Length: 394
Ligand code: HEM
Image 1 (cartoon, rainbow, N blue to C red):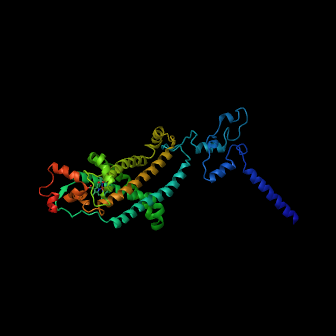
Image 2: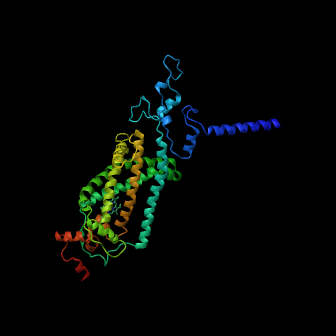
Image 3: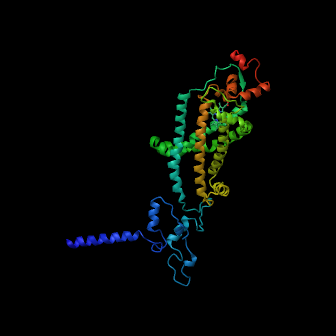
């Protein structure tokens, strides 16, 4: 019995010594592999300098001389070969000639997957719910923005047929892209538990087809509306007055505006700049590995801002950045567009007609775009006998 207890104590003692010894491993003692400190640091989520293994992919100088007897692997070991594959440091030959076929291991994929399923889905989805909640609150707090004194009854042309066509091509494609994009990003997590794998598979395949093809209509709509409206969206001093007065959203006062007010200019530029960016990253995703854009963009950013983004990216990493960026930009656009849809429909009396039949009530136009109405008046485009004073009997 005492012998057994003694043996146990010795075993325990040697384990503790062994452990404390293990905690202090040096690079030499691991033969150049990870030390206990590296492992502990990684487990604590700290960044470690992994050059000791990233660069240890076989060193011809350290190899045995050809005159000496080589082991079964020649001058390199299994681990060196594996590291060479992992850090894409080997001259790999493959029979498949695809653009990224010789990348056998790409460990950034896990980070990308976690980011996509975690923060991207949570914050992106949260932002959409947030803006919807805010608009519901705004609707109950402020109510529908009405035409003061009611409509004039006479109308004025606000958008020509071609402008409305451009707008609806842009809008309908965006809505389809938004819905199918969300389905692709969140479907696996949200829908599979509800409708099952079979049904989701059909939905996902259809959704991908719609997304890939409707993207071109979006680009067409973007192109059309840009050229038709850019002139009216150049910022000017009037926009500052509009902002100073809070856009007239909270009070009764209507700050003066030309064809587009400062709020609309924000929507316009958000749609144009982000729409262009989402299209570029989308093209990069549509033609995998053909149009890598991020390494070059990062290099430009580094030289302009002095940042230190990676400028050498594997083909898969390029795609991963493109996907994450595409989704972030799309979420920002969706938040802005949900607010735009609200104000262009239920949020404001008389607004929808502008894009519906192109004719807006003259009183609406005077209240929201007084200077534009004055311009149209000067061009002789306002029907006779429909001035503001006539309507209000002043
Ligand atoms: C689907 C529902 C939508 C509705 C009901 C809607 C409604 C409207 C209306 C009424 C206007 C004219 C505002 C005025 O007379 O001053 C307008 C303008 C505009 N729309 Fe939409 N829209 C929708 C979706 C979209 C989408 C998805 C986009 C872009 C992706 C978009 C981009 C624009 C732009 C850039 C303008 C000009 C600037 C502005 O008025 O804010 N719209 N929209």
